[in-house]
Image (cartoon, rainbow over all chains, first blue to last red; front, side):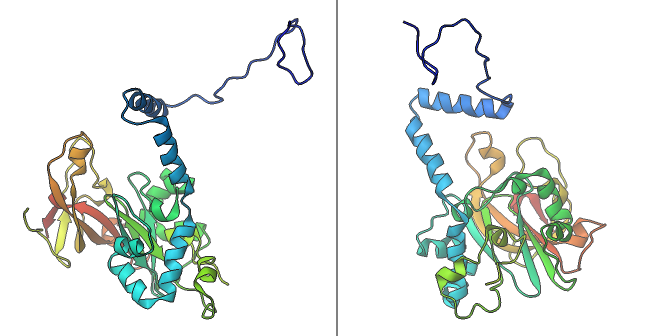
Length: 214
Length: 94
């Protein structure tokens, strides 16, 4: 009998099927290396494929909603905000958020000072609070220009600061991770924490934009 | 464990050096003067960790630099700053 692999039913092989490559793009050196190391670790019993999958699932499950919850708490509770600015890692632990191997430094925007986060060496990012970084954060353009011409970069994101506002750039070069505490928008006095958190965007916690207006 | 060499407010200068290997002191900040913002704690030296060697745990600082001293052609206010994390062996008193 002829084998059945077409939705239209059995057919004989009197024609050629076009073949599509399984991988549309050449894989690069580092991807190849990463896959080889993973295969070796699994083969040698150091890790299981399920452990790798679970870790990826855990990384993918984090989102800026976690950071937004921290910011909304800081806006609502001055004592928590003071603890967050003094020791970001410990204050996040109060909310059940673990930073892992890195320590958190929270930098507060003020009317006279705006903070911006970058990692010029690679793509260090507060993943425990924001999930995976956006592609632009990892781009060479952003990494080079955020330190050298932060005001021009901010303007491209639509954030034009008055000349009198200081710009404080933070380059995550080692074991600290940074989160911007944006200014609380005007007209939000009556909002509860959940409503406040909805105004806190990923970009506002990296520092390229203000928090959303209500 | 030795005491941290610098305290917040101390003026420092980043060593001007270009050794081979895995270095986490960005090139743009080498040779520049700044001020210790805080001691972050003690962390494994990435220059050794990158090669699977452990041993030295070094004081790590956040150092604040005035943007105008980092980039001669900087366009922005005098108050603009950049903070960089730098391990102690890359810093000297200024």
